[in-house]
Structure formats: C-alpha cells, structure tokens
Image 1 (cartoon, rainbow, N blue to C red):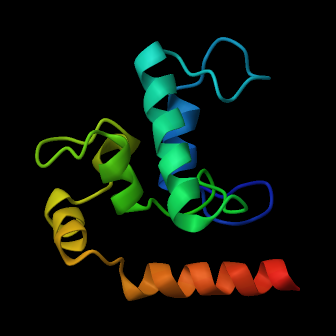
Image 2 (image 1 turned 180 degrees about the vertical axis):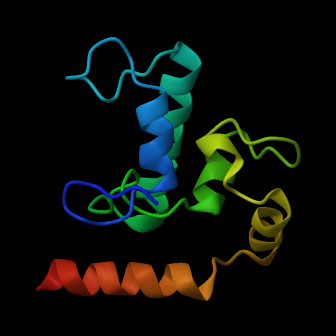
Length: 117
C-alpha cells in the first residue's frame, strides 16, 4: 500500500482522487470530468453530514452509507466512485440495518476524542 508524505497509508478515496486529477493541480476539488467532480462533491457532503464537519472524507476510510446516499441510493451495480472498493452486498446490509460497522463507529469515536484534545 502506498504511503503519504506523513507516513500513513493512502486511502481509497485519495487514490481515486489522484487518478482523476483535473488540469489545475492547485484545485483538488476540480477533477478530470464534471461527473467525477459532482460525484466527489456529493460524497463529501454526505460524509460530512454523517461524520461531522471536522471529519476529512478524503483521508478517512470510505463511508459506504455516505457513498450509497450520495449516489441516489444506487441499489446494485457498480458504484461510480472509488474504483469499486465498496462491496455492494455489504453496503446494502448496512443500509437495511440502518447502522455502520463497529470498526467505523470506533474510528469516529477515536477521531472525536483526538479533536477534543
């Protein structure tokens, strides 16, 4: 797994954004296509709704529920973001149960604890 300059693993979202860079490297929010830019914007918005404004949707693990909600609740087929890293069956189980995985809950709790410090 590639590492960032800070020494942590590159997330799936970071890798996807890198492979969809636009013409202006100083504007990471503008990707190589309008569709990619809009998809990422919707994902970031839903991610923030679900995880708080201080959470970073780019350097965090993919939130499959935010991905699902940001893409018109796509029930099957390929997700338009992150090169298929989200397992559709697993995501739909989470959607139906209305909860996220214990690992994601723990990560959010740990992130909030770090923000408080």
